[in-house]
Image 1 (cartoon, rainbow, N blue to C red):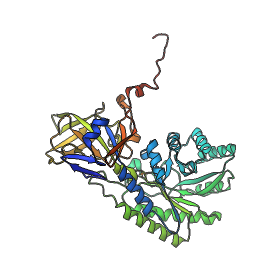
Image 2: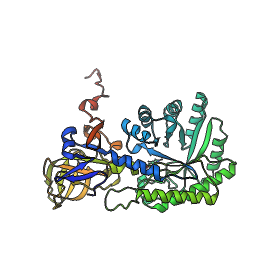
Image 3: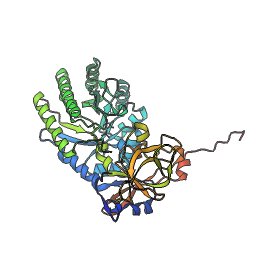
Image 4: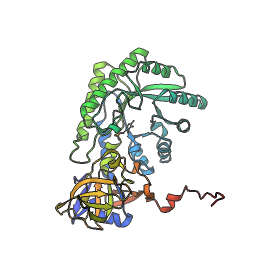
Amino acid sequence: MKRLGNMEVDNHELKIGGLAVSELTKKFGTPLYVIDQKDLTDRIHTFLAQFKSNTFGTHIIYASKAFTNLYMAQLVSKYGLYVDVVSGGELYTALKAGVDPKKIYFHGNNKLPKEIDDAVKAGVGCFVLDNEVEYEWLTETAEREGKKIRVLLRVNPGIEAHTHEYIQTAKNDSKFGVSIFDQQTLPFIKRIIENKHLHFAGLHAHIGSQVFEEASFFKEVDEMIKYAKDVEQTFAIKMDELNLGGGFGVYYTEEDKPFELSQFLKRYIQHIESTVAELDITPNTISIEPGRSLINASGSTLYTIGAVKKTMAGYPYIFVDGGMTDNPRPILYQAKYEAAIANKMDEAATQTYRIAGKCCESGDVLIKEVDLPKAETGDTLVIPSTGAYTYSMSSNYNRIERPAVVFVEDGQAQVAVKRETYEDLIRNDEMIKWKEL
Ligand SMILES: *Cc1c(COP(=O)(O)O)cnc(C)c1O
């Protein structure tokens, strides 16, 4: 297991943010999401420091769908990031956390009328329009509320990023946005520009997630800037903002070869600067929207090992007290992870294991094959790189309570989200009294 962020080994045991894993599990129980706060804030600083230009302004927008809660939203906005939301619930969380509504971008391919209404009333700073139905709803709401709404149009530049099919987003048949190759797109932009309730601020694209090819991002820049130039010339307007999305790939296992973030961001900015210079177009702001690349490496999940069971025909299974409920990525995307036994960090791996969860699904396997020291009941298993799309995608399948989330730094731990209780599980259930019962 590669040690990430502020992980160290002391007396055979893993420490995260200066805290021994055994202290964390004793105090907070398992399964447990642990966020290495210093690692996170360091990365926020890297984004802010490197994605910066003398030619145009930049916004770093945190894609909160990767991982959000009141504290996380508060933390990223305190450090100067903007916040992406894709639903009324994410919007509510950001607003309750005190995020400035002007610094919120509202995304999504099917924003509901009520969500649009809430967002307009809250004064959300930017809507990323996906389609014409939404355009009509937003216009009606803006008119009713007497507001002029700043919008970006989500366009699809037709770039095929090499990633899992479910997380590719800019292919020509993607559900997101409108294609730059579609004849209807320029007329649509014209309608937005001429609409007196909307302010057409520019374009947005997001080519996919967990993308490792720098070339894909550079190609996106080329296509988007060319298209922006086209739009500027066709309608004699000036583009205020170009938003290039997120999707920067991260490390899960040795199969992943992510770029070194700080170097990549520097080259990315240079590529954008030379392209805008070449085409003589300078938007006031160029934005990016990291989700996974900001939070993933800061998160780890701790589990207690229950039974270790050898099947007749395969690896011994390690059963843990969580599974697809706290991390559905393996079952959803065949995602791979590394692991270690947190209380046996100095022992050599002697055995290949399969890590399975406790859900009633044969597919509830967190890791298919991992080499570990001899595992015993009561050991603590740590799976790192679980900051993004785990807690945010978690479920209560089998009526399993969602784990707690704790942030750790300098030997201190703070609960950001409490562990759910059985009471929480039945909170919305109603005992209906039909006459037969
Ligand atoms: C999901 C998403 C992101 C973030 O993607 P990551 O892979 O987590 O960086 C950014 N922008 C949009 C529009 C998204 O849908």
